[in-house]
Picture 1 (cartoon, one colour):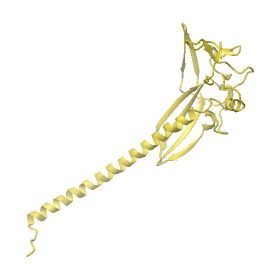
Picture 2 (tube, one colour; picture 1 turned 45 degrees about the vertical axis):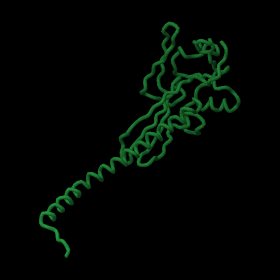
Picture 3 (cartoon, helix red, strand yellow; picture 1 turned 60 degrees about the vertical axis):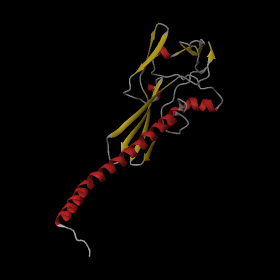
Picture 4 (tube, rainbow, N blue to C red; picture 1 turned 135 degrees about the vertical axis):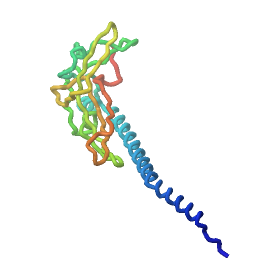
Length: 209
């Protein structure tokens, strides 16, 4: 003989099913949020990797060309930089401690380039670059930002203003800002900005003072 449900058991079953159904939208919402978080994590990692790749490139399109031609990547002249960082002869004031060595400029005046996206053999070429990752878009910009050097006893340091960037050669400075912006799909508001500042310091090879 089959055992039938009692009224109490039936009511308890209905209550349990009701609670489960009430919890379903919350579970779906939590699952969607988890997926969104995972998507944003992927975007942050990709943005960081992109920023790292760009920062490893030569500082300027011109120095990249000269390097490929067999020349060391040296200081470039700029048109709107701090005078303290300008050339004195073929060198810049200051030296590396404790070796007393300094990096030098190219023998002939060689101006930093206007920033454009003609190719990606230097930092400049990534200005305006964009790509999609999951449900987000990554966009990059490269611009000159103001530099200001100050001397305190034997120590030289640099400060800068992160706003008012320029890309023209006539506004070139010794500091470039690389920015990667993460924007969610169907949104005009950036979710995050990652920035890296690259200085006009030439290559790692040095010349004796």
